[in-house]
Image 1 (tube, rainbow, N blue to C red):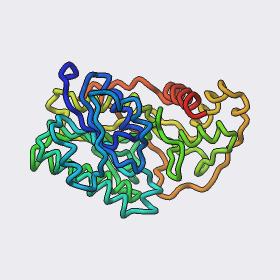
Image 2 (tube, helix red, strand yellow):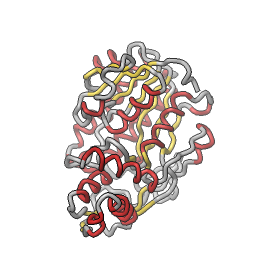
Image 3 (cartoon, helix red, strand yellow):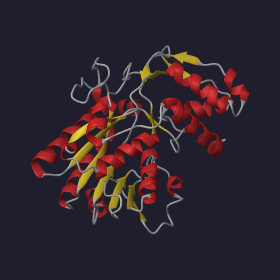
Length: 327
């Protein structure tokens, strides 16, 4: 790994949850970091600790504008493309904007990276690409049909990346994220992810609403495991490592009922009344995959991936962060 060399890394969506954690990590490694963000879903406060760092630069721009993309990639060694409009429900409500950002914006970044001759383009792919595939655990080479506009956009990203690798020689690596959670994940808004949303509700003694009977399961993945995968993807010298996709997960699945039980347990250590907050069960959500579990054997074998945080270990860290920062 070339971490002893000072590289310049562009992180798109760097003001977001995952992006800001990546900015912090690579700055701590002594790398130069450029953040490109339009603050549609990211937050300035996520960057506040970096703004005076001479190795950090913020470019306020939009990946839907090719000129912004071309500006951002100047002098860049590696791109970590995190900018996207997440959320299955958001894509169902507004498929046009989701497509503009996730497909047109992605293509703009690929073209800009190609023209600037960056060394490698690592991008956030998604477990939603597995769609209606019944196979468990999910193996990279076996996918089903997408179940939402969001899933379609993330699969199209993989197709474009593959074509740019074959046609233009651009090194690409896609990381199929599985239900990432952790510090800085936004608990507010209509499309907040389940873990921060439930944490905030429980801290306020409000009943979380689980879609369905709570037996849907997910491979919840703590942010530090995701950071590790991005670092391995950037710096791997294994010639087999590039121009492919990897599951980015812990490799275990837990039900939503399990999740709420853990949240009550760990939040209860700060406030015992939270343990008694009742849970409400609602309808299943359109576009949701019932069960998700990743095989991480490919990432282990080729990249040397070794995730350190299980759901429980990650939740302990995340709950403590939310309590200390948002209570």
